[in-house]
Length: 129
Image 1: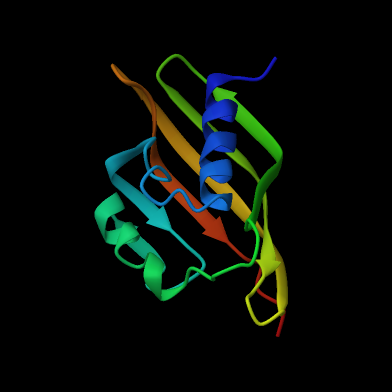
Image 2: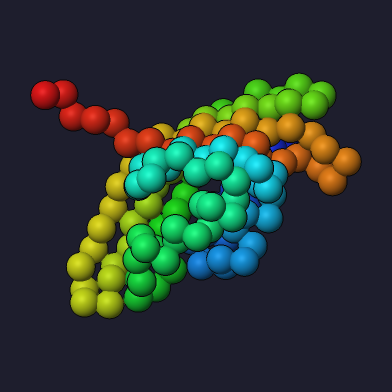
């Protein structure tokens, strides 16, 4: 049976894929700490994270591929964590395709308003040197 946490995370990915910028961070706590694959790598609070989006968000011809797979959720009464793989990709207006698979980890707490993401960590493996 899908959990509320899994449903929340899949909804986050779906809102991201469809460019619903005003709703993407709806389930994040305002003071969430977010680690991302792009600079500055660490964001303290959703406002700081949101302020960087225009610098990297690719303009795709169709919906952006942004899909969580192999999601594992461990849920307690007031805290939960989840991890999985995030498939990202699309086609730009000039016809270039891009695709990537990154790791995703989330920490959540239950509040009076429901589950909130308090930590999000998206990372790409580094090739051995």
